[in-house]
Amino acid sequence: MAIREADFDGAILVIAPHMDDESLGCGLLLASRPDKKRVHVVFVTDGSHSPARAGQSLEAARNLARVRQEEALAALEVLGVPADNAEFLGFEDGTLDRSGSRLEAAIVDQVQQRGVAFVFVPFRYDRHPDHLAINRATWAARRRGAIEAAVVEYFVYSQWRLLRSGDVRDYLFPGLLRRLEAGPATPLKRRALECHRSQVTRYFDWQARPILTAELLDRVCAEPETFLVQDPAREGQSVLARGRTWVPIAHRAEPVLKRWKDRLAGWKGA
Image 1: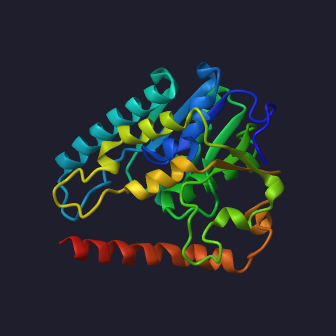
Image 2: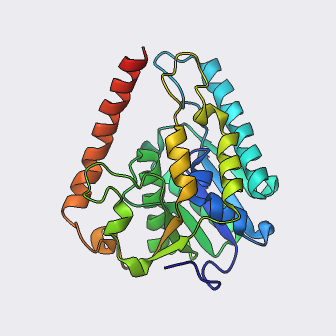
């Protein structure tokens, strides 16, 4: 279902696990919002480990974190989001699944400070552990009443090799989904993604390929942005119209396949 005028009517907060997730999953949404003063983005991790390799020094990690913050602010400028509406929480990249109550408390603090009506978080069956940790922490806070804002889920890793259709969004109840079609804001989304140079180029000489490939950028800029909106009572598999057994199994297996694919790419690029 296409996004209606009444959908997401109010201030919104996009919680991005990493610097680039805001543009990948919500770039069209952010660019097309008419009142930018009511658009907020929180970056949870510091970006210090992507791209990185074994033995990275503390100084290199700090430099990369600084570069990625600069890239994120440049991307938000393209999307029209005021710099004052951005926050960098500084959790170490790749550690959110071990952050416990600190993560939930930080999310609650941001939501309450900004008085938003809608909180956008990564999809509950996303692949990256940092994405899953944010989804779980936000829903936990919502269930215990610490967050009153509606929670909306966006998609970053929607393409799955182990699903027949190749796209996990095809397995959800259509009535729960809202789609924002590619349109006049699409060039802004592409420009915002290109601001994340550390992710869309071979930023270091040792990289075999960019973190975000040109093929991926072409796809995410050509397709609609999809958002999952549902009653808080619909937890876990209850949003799945089909594949309630297979989708959770595939969700656990996909990251393993991804690691093997990345290793193979590294060997070929060596």
